[in-house]
Amino acid sequence: MKEAAAGKSSLTPIFPAMAGSRLLRPSIPFRFFGAAVIFHVGAWIALFIGADATPRFAGGLGWPLVVLHFVTLGVLAMSAIGASLQLLPVATRRSVGSERWPAAIWWLYTPGVAMTALGMGTGAVTALAAGAVAVVAALGIYAALLARNLVGAKGMPVVVAHGWAALASLAIVLATALALAGAYAGAPTLDRATVIGLHVVFAAYGFMGMLALGLSYILVPMYALSAAPAERPAWASFALAVLALLLAGAAALDFAPVALRTAAAAAGLASVALHLHLMTTALRTGMRRHLGRSFTLVRVAWAMLVASLLLALALVFDAPVDGLATSFGVVVIGGWLLTFLLGILQRIVPFLASMHAGQVGTRGRGLPPTPSALTAARPLAIHFACHLAALALLALAVAVDSALAIRAAAALGTAGALAFGAFFAAAMRRMRRPQAPAGTAAMPGS
Image 1 (cartoon, one colour):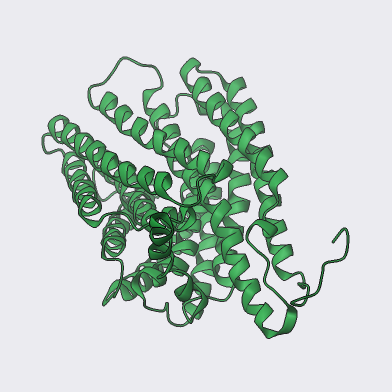
Image 2 (cartoon, helix red, strand yellow):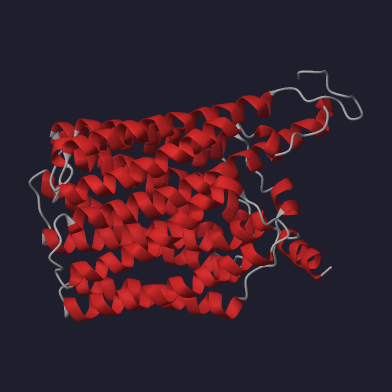
């Protein structure tokens, strides 16, 4: 009885909101997820092309930079935009408003990402600059929509606070992105090391990190059927995360960099410890205990988040490890953020598809399908094995400085990304498939 009550308390604010006026047309979130699926494949292919330069990549134009931005802009930020446009209205109890603006973001952002990456890979500075302007403009519109939604929010204050922190981080990311693009175009404005330091911290841990932590307070209890996490430790985790960002930002500006980066990593570890305690409690006490491969990926991502902060400390103290900076990038971008996103998308895509199919079903097409009915299990099993194997091989390749191992990792990653794409395509196809009318038995083999 106690567990049932806990599950109900978590779900009560979610399902009515998702089924009500705050459920966007399916073409809005799914166009972002679909683009992310394509850029995911492109990132692994770009890694194969740029394998020779990857193990000891230290910055500059080239295919490793294409890989980085295909993942960060094309997969992570693309998915974050689509997910937050749908999920944050649930948390704030405010609609996103006109759907023209989210559609406009996609039309501006998607070619902008492609053009930016093309410029990075080929050294075409004009294309890079034009793409960067389009990306910044699209993210600026997204930031305005996000701010509008957060102002006057009526629910889930901890989630809303994470949204504000992500928004502030995004402003810094956009400013530093323009500064970096200007430097490549021959118009430097700030010291490059300072700009890169701010850009990396506030892109990975600020914008994407705070969105991931904040939305987890909605998604993990919802899928585990558990009670909402306790607010006091959630607020403490949030405060420590913000402190870590502020300290890391100050260190990037060359104020006592060693001491402040050390303190930032310590604060980050404390924040993560509290957050993971809340998340594991939700998973342990939820009515749904077996969440499959998707949450195995989420748990792997959580471990990589901790590892990324430990590697950050190793970088602060200049540990004598070859390829340490590249290893940090692999762990924070691939191990934590990408793995977490792919695990969560395996749940979000069928869930939203079921909700949209349910809306159609109320107009006479029959009962809506369940999320499990919209999930293609075999492609996800292939993706699971390929993704984890690719990450392990990629980490080994960086450690031993092997371009051949990078190509092997890229081949496995491409296979996994294609399998994930098959899962997404199956969910979209099944969502549109007519359902059997209520009370009608399905035909054998259907």
